[in-house]
Image 1 (cartoon, rainbow, N blue to C red):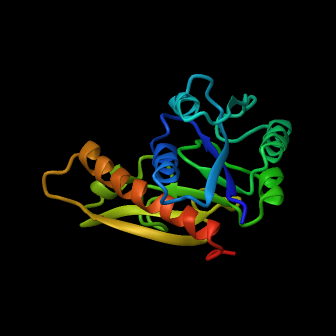
Image 2: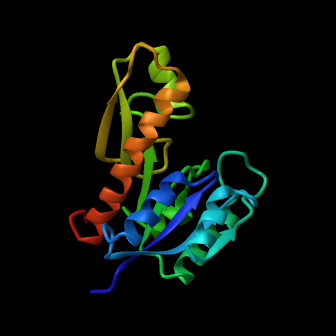
Amino acid sequence: MNPLTIGVLGSGKGSNCGAILEAIADGRLAETRVGAVISDVPDAGILALARQHKVPARHLPPGKFKTKLEPHCEEQLVALLQKHGVELVVLAGYMRLLKEPMLAAFPRRILNIHPSLLPKYPGLQAWKQALDAGERQAGCTVHLVDGGMDTGEILAQATVPVLAHDTPETLHARIQAAEHELYPQVVGWFASGRVR
């Protein structure tokens, strides 16, 4: 059976991309390969990380909008992913909402990981929102991407305790550690056919 080819989109340093690449390298995701890593930020750390792993790394300018891609840019993104044979799109800190060109090209084939127990605390700095609200538990969610912000079907969650001495930074670090375990696991479900 051919490995599942994933494409990773990210805007930052790419720690979740790194966790997936490590899981592939050490055999936990042996049935998966990364076809391309694409960023809307020209000097994003995720691109350097991809190059270290000998994965094609591309910057794709987003156009004039701050939170989404211009339609022609999103069509370019679809074409680039298809050129690299991508079957599953994995968002790893990608700070733009995806719309119809991507959703139509990859139906139920775009994953996102969010640092809260959705549906609570969508949007930015979810760990800080949870801390400010006095939550006793926080965590992360892997979900399918739809047209909204962090609103797609939930596939898996992992919880972490909120400790009395937590700062936003310490809680975020604990959530990221959980993300690095959960995200490769869910990608593996797609590779093994457990998610359709």
